[in-house]
Structure formats: structure tokens, C-alpha cells
Length: 209
Image (tube, rainbow, N blue to C red):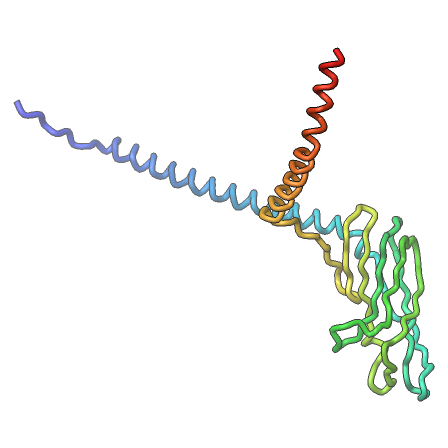
């Protein structure tokens, strides 16, 4: 006898649609969880960066005075700057350069170097060329700071802009492999040169026994 094909019942359809709905809800839940996890990671990274820059934001430099020792009475030859560390911890290896708006290179003759700064330090920058008052305003001068905070992190701050972390890039894999290969090659050559004398030492030691 031929088997009669059983027609799906309404309960089967409901069960199938329920399984499909459950699969869709599970997929949405997984996507939502992934997006929430990604958001939490981003928030934590922002909080970490904010905490890392807490001390760097409290280090401020500003021009406070201009000196005129040029041939003309309106020529600026020196600019005095005040660097203030408002944090409770010192900063290290501070380098200060003087810039002026519109120029890419430092207008100061030489940068200032300070090994440790706890509170305030003053610095007078000699300009590379005299500038007239009519051509330059005090607000156009700004200082660029490079320093290491108490946590050992390197920072750069330009004027009153937010400080930026200075990260030294790690060498590429090819560079590391090349350095390692060169090191081991030199070590092998030194070992080969010393091999005859070492063998002779072993032979003499054996005979002495």
C-alpha cells in the first residue's frame, strides 16, 4: 500500500515559527551584546586615556613678557616664558621651544632643557631675528613642551591645546629578525674562533687526569 503523506499540523507550523523567532531573537541578543561590549571597551579606553593625561593637562606654558634690545625701540629680541606644573607630582626631561603663529620652525634660538620641574620655571628665549611690535602680537607666541610625567609617559603640549601622548613605535618584525640574526651570527663566529682553544683546553684537562 502506498504511504499517505502526512499533512503538517497547525502545531507543527507554530513550533517551526517559534523556533525561527527564537533564532532571530538569539541573533539580535548576540549582536546587541557585542555592540554593548564594544561600547564598554571604548568607554574604558577613553577613561584610561583621560586618566593618563590627568597630570599632563596640568602642565602649562605661556609667554609673559617681551624684551626689546634691538636697534629699534619697537623690535622684540627676547620673549620670557613661564612654565607651571600645577600637579602635585614632578615632571622630567622637559624641553621647551618657542613658536609663533604662521611659522613651522621654532623662532627661539635654542630650546630650554630642565631635568626636573616641580612647580614653576622661567625661561627667556632669544629670537633668531628681531620682530617688530607692529608685525607681531603677544598672543601669537606659544610654547611647545615635551616632557615625561611621573608615570613615565611621554607627552607633547602645543600652546594651550590638549597634550598628546608620544609613543615610540616598536620596530617591525623584519627589523627585529634582522637584528636577531646579526646578533646570533656574530656570536656564532666568535664561538667558532674560540673552538680550537677550547678543544685544546679539554684535551689538556683529559691528559692531566
